[in-house]
Structure formats: structure tokens, C-alpha cells
Image (cartoon, rainbow, N blue to C red; front, side, top):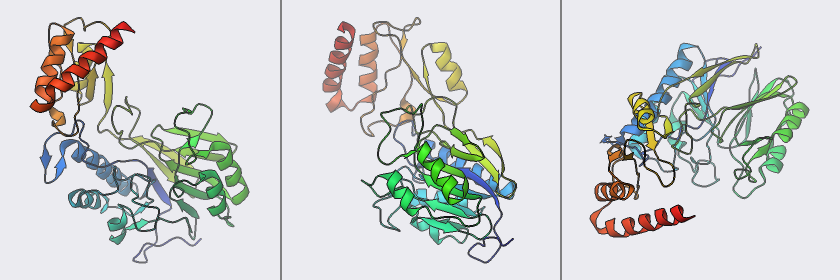
Length: 353
């Protein structure tokens, strides 16, 4: 069997390590102090990517990133360099995600510099590559386009069978949140039908951050899940997955990496335990009450007016006292009165509802 080659003509391994949705960036929330242009949280995110790359290398695999390497389409030069350093150790295939792209035009995305690396191949247009196990790399559909119709148009027939699909699409399934479904997603049934008709056995998809695996006969669709969660929109421990897939044997194993995690806590003890493990924690009390120990965490993020490592529980005897303490410490002086008034009004409305 013939096999794909890298840019230098060396044969590429048929073992792949699939990850998705790293969202590397200088996130303002819980960002921490900056060093060489990267805040603390950003450095932790890049460290997870570096660990995944080293793991792939150690297993003799190539890394495949299913989109959203960066959190924004215009990352800083320092961040681009850090990501390039992380990927330098392993052969890598990557497609842009929606967060990586400036426009739909090829090359107009944050991954363009990565494509200059000898070990990285960026697929910003639909492409079936081979020989050996043929793999179809597919970036998101153009904005405003019905993704299911577009995907059916661009997915080629794989004449050799047992092909793979790499894409950046949310996979719509029976339990999907209806508020997330839009024309940029792919219905599970559509993907399975096209896979069967056109010679593919497995699909790896980024975009939606919760890991899901769907099976239909010998066909498998995997929503890989976020390698790194993006914040309290991705709470809990269930992130950090990498799928190691043997394209010749058709077998896979799943591996999990640490890194930033975000939790909601309802007691001081729970919050303290989670924070001791290095997690980012929000502590809240039931409506109209204060936590038993008289502690209330109030997080007020006004753009970048505070560094996220300043977020912490505020000890107070009452909810209003906690609100005053948080506003005084976290909000710029010229904004405090307005923020305090609006916060009190919101709390009053919530208490009377």
C-alpha cells in the first residue's frame, strides 16, 4: 500500500491523534499576569496543546486538529509563535475553525503562518488526500450557507473505501440543544448517509465542545470535544480528550489531558476544594440568601478592567455589603456608582420575582 508523504517526502504514519477546539488566546476572564505577551491562562492552554503534540509524537502518530486552534482570527505574534513551538515536535494536519477565520477566503485565517512550517499542513479548502487511507479535510461551510447542502456538494466519492472525514461542524443529534442548532451544523443522519454512499467509515468533527460518539453499523461519527474548555460556558471536568486512531486496523483509544477547568460551586467548602485542585471556581448562593458562612462571590467583569487572578471570594456580613466590596475592588472608580446602582436594581428585581 502506498502512503501519504510530508512536505519533505517522508512517509506519514497512518496512526492519527485527533483533537479539536483549543481556543488559544489571552482570555480576559481568569487570565492572570502576562509574561512575554501571554497571560497565565493562555500559557496553560498552550501547554495542553504542547502535551497533546508530544503525546502524539511518542505514539508515532500525527496530530490532526479539527479546527479552532485560536480563539480569535487575529492572534498576537507572541501567541502564534507559542503555538508554532508547541506543534514543532510532530507532523500535524489542521483545518481552520470558525474562530480561526477572518473571511471564507483561502489563506485569510489565523492558521496561515502555521502552514509555513515544514511539518504542518493546513487545509483551508475541502480536500481529499491520499494515497493509503484517504482522508477528507473540510473547513466550515461559507458563512450564510446551508452546511448540509454544501457538505453534500463538496464531499467526494472515495473510491478506495474506508476513508476518514475531518471537519469543523456541530453534529445535530436527538439530544442536541435546540438553541445551538443553525444552518452551519450537520445533521447526524445526513452525515451517516453520505458516509455510506461515498466510502467513508469514520468522521472526526470539532466545533461543539462536548464529546459525543455516534455509531451506525460499522460507521462512527465522533464529536471530538474541546481539548480545552473556554470558560463557564463549558463547566465541569469532561474535556481534554484526544482520540488515538489506527487507520489500518480501524481501532481507537481515548486519552484525557488536564488543563484549565471551570466549576460552579454552591458552598465555600466545595469552592475551596476545587480551587485547591487548580480549578477556576464561581461561588453563588441561592436567591435571597447568603451562603451559610456569610461568604458571597460576586464576579463583575468590565472588559479588561481587572486581571482575572484578582477574582476571589469576598467575605461580607450581607449581600449588599458583598456587592459594595466587589464593586469597590473590581470596577474602575468612574464606573462604580453606575455598576452598583444597576446591580442593586437587578438583585431587587430578582428578589421580587
